[in-house]
Length: 302
Image 1: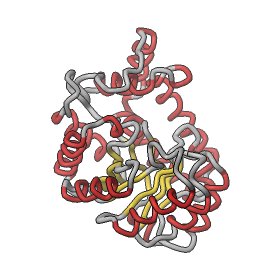
Image 2: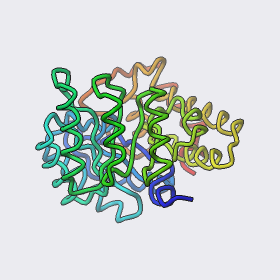
Image 3: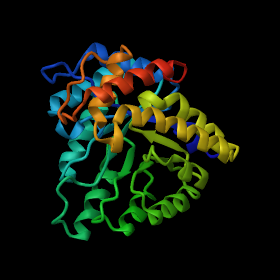
């Protein structure tokens, strides 16, 4: 087994951020969330991503989120922090902050406003960051068409890149990541939690799921099932994950983040459903979440 599989491979959670009603970091809830992830035997947590509402957080709040999570974690999981911005100088500043606040890995996605950027500027953005980062870097692909495959081919081969979160749903990117990971220490994780089987069977090292705080005990089992190439078990576990996720997210994921936070309130982890994104939460979805939690105690609290 390669070193990468021992160090980073496994089930990760892209964690939501708990807020007070005034949209401040809810420190007691954050500590409970970290403790819960440890209970779920997650390899690591990714904070401040899309599920964590990082793009909307003031920098001071992002730093507080990182610092509190790192202290609560006390080295038991890897802490990865989203550092994406529109210029590499800003990203490098965010990485310095993340390192000072206790993060292990800095994760960058496509620049937020990169539409006007020329391909050579996109490449410069990625390479300047990985060449100068104060932390090991994780690359997060959300499938943005403006990032050429050649950029991923170059950046994923860089020695300072340790992790790749693939939410692209792009087979060419999947093939590229697998070919590079076969030759160097690069941990590749699927971020597509509604279709993990394909990627685990293809050889991905694990998953990084936005619903990991709910389905983490099941994704741990999925990673283990993938090692033995047990397709039937993987499909059974995926279906189980889907039942939990769709109960929380609502039909067609219309109630996504508020539903997830409502579930965490009912589980005694979060104190509020507050957030920047304000997804709706009809009573019918609340009732479905209540029923799911009552039924899924063994999976939610292993």
